[in-house]
Structure formats: C-alpha cells, structure tokens
Image (cartoon, helix red, strand yellow):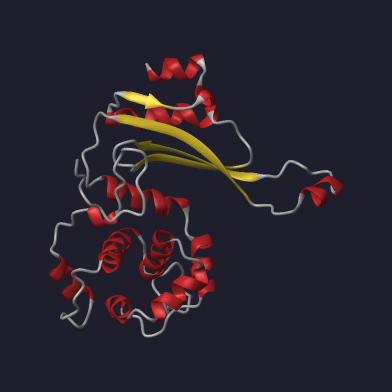
Length: 241
C-alpha cells in the first residue's frame, strides 16, 4: 500500500501531519515573489524549505505589524523575524544554528530582502516579545483555509518549567514545587491543526481548561472528543453531550 508523500517533519501514528506547505494560497507563487521582492527572477521551485518560508512569510505579513514599536531601530520587520523563528522550529535547530544556516542561504536572504542576518539574540527577544494574541490571530488565519467539520478532536495539556534550579537548591530554599506555564490545546486528529489553545501561568489541573475548550470546538461538530483520565469527570461529560 502506497501512501502520499508529504514534506512534514514527522507523522503521528496513522494521521497525516500538515504543515504550511499544504496550505493553498489564492495567488500563484510567481505573483507573490514579484510583489515581495525587487528581483522577480528568484527561483524557489523544488526547494521545499524556501516554499515553507514563503508560506510562513505570507501568513505573518497578514497578521503581524511591520514593527512592534514606533521607536525601534526598524532593522528587521516582525514577519521576517517570525519566518526565521518558524524555520528554526521546523528544522529543529538552535538559535545559533539557524543564523549560521541563513548566512549560507543566498536565495532565502534575497527573498526576505535581508542585507545582513540578525543576531541570534534578536530572534530570542522577538520570541519573548510576541503576544499570545498574535499567535491566535495567525492560527485563525490558517484555519480559515480549511473546512473542518466532523472527525475526532483530542484534548491535552502540558506544562513548561521556567525554573531550572536543581532539587538540592530547591530543598534549601523550601520551594521544591517549581512553577511553570500551563498550555492546553485541542487539535484535529486527522490534520493535527490546533483548533483551540489556552495558556496560563501557574500549576492548574486540566479540567479548568476543558469546559472552555469544549465550548469553543463545538462549532466543528466533532464525532468524538478524545482525552486522557485527567478529563474523566461528570461535568465534562455533560458539557460534551
């Protein structure tokens, strides 16, 4: 049995993992490149990393302002920094590695119209500065390209620690339980697209996010809602019904 070849970083079980390469833009690639670059003869066909960068840049251009502050240096726009950040996550590189890789990519620098490559700390500061609202607006723009009704939707939450002290030091200062940021998402199992996400600081149980997520995903009319034992409560069952 032959499966369709995709250029996704990975596949989860038997479901297909979509990325921005699978998103269809209304305008052809040639017109987009002619509009965004001075040189209209840039050839990006055949290079999937450059195609991925083109898709990311288009969505970031539609959702993000050029500059976060009027008094900034105005050296690099936010869509360009977001494209570099997305390439870093897509290729699973570090901040230093993605900057070194971009210095060798002439076509990508020409497409983004960058005369100099930003320092890796610039990408780090941009990632800390970008707001949750911008991510939600970008995800909403992506979801508008698809008709997601029916199917299965999975709920889950995960914590990200912001304290890297070892256990011995935590025991001395009498703070063994480390605080972390809680991220709760709801995805479509078939496409792996994020349908709803909630972020909150501090340790909280998954049931605090479940009801709001279930109400938000009802517009997709799912056949099944999949979750682990953390959501096995009677109020959540009533909310699903």
